[in-house]
Length: 99
Image (cartoon, rainbow, N blue to C red):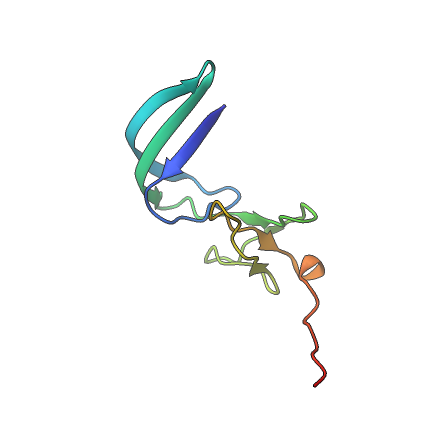
């Protein structure tokens, strides 16, 4: 298992091929390596092909420009800064407040 620490914000997409510049690599525990990388750059011609829903696992093709499919939205980032994508079916209902 390899965990990555990325120096710049980057949201990975299904099918995206990226270029990583490795800053360091070291063993955290037997069999567990850690890579620290910077300059995460999508390679030209390798735009994302789809997005996966973080709740139901549905994978849907990206728009031709690589952007989110219609009706998809990012969920809030977790404590590690990881953002999940949500398909229209898995998005929370808007809260209605009655005053």
